[in-house]
Image 1 (tube, rainbow, N blue to C red):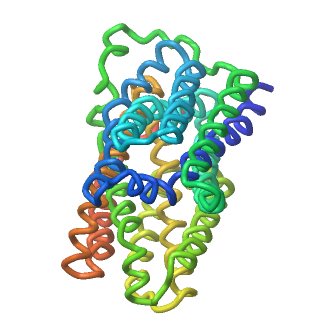
Image 2 (image 1 turned 180 degrees about the vertical axis):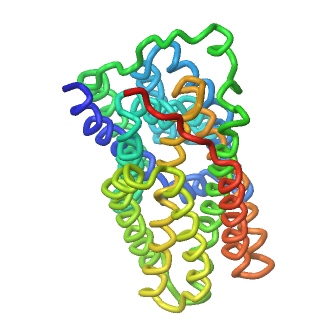
Length: 385
């Protein structure tokens, strides 16, 4: 019974976590600007969060292998609540930096621990479905969060931060009351528990690089598409908000309802390769955007392909890695964060050279990841029945 109820609870938890995170996205630039931040400082404010996640995610994943998923997840959600609250009461720019650093350090526990939790409670046959459900929760959170933040920012720029803190606090209570511990001692040696890089073995290393490349190409698109769409199709911020909402809904539906069926029928490797092919087609179509409709359709096609990759990579990794689930997913989150650190400035620089370059380079990077995975993908060992 625990396994049947745990996934819906985890879905709600990750949805609320991402709603809280998404609430501040449309507000933070204006909030920081109000405190005197220049464009460079704003970029640093955004980047420092991902940098902390890059550094600390493997540590939290490994710790969850040792002491359990639930306490580590509660630490991560507490960090979010505290970070949002400090941002809400900030009066100086340095306070925002402190809050973002603290939030990045602690909240980096959430995603790898959630994925490790799914790996704990699912069979290998249903692993892809479980990871897809987490991906759907994340996607829907990013759809609703920014919309809520935009609405409440009209009352005051600090209001969305208070709301995000409250959302995290409610989530913390839900985890404490409803979520049962999933981790059981697996007999790992003390050496395995100490080594952050235990998960990075020759057999599965390609999965980390695939995640890095996919994250890199996606974040480059996210950083430049608003400018691209404005120049190519004259779209404003409201229309872009609707486009990203449509893309988010499409990705969430595919992750929540289709990833599990596809991985069960064809296996994770085939789904990852299919997702990359669709992503490349999406990148190519984006170059042809000329109005709202084509922007919504082409970006959604890209999002559908991109959306199936992360849960399938996570599922395949937990099946093939010899390290603990938390160590594996923590290191995967670290590679994802590295892509999100490099992607936006790289995408911006390429856009300054030619507006189509971020999408041409995104397609090339994805093709490179496709062939790298094709030749070096890990093999799933037959499950013991």
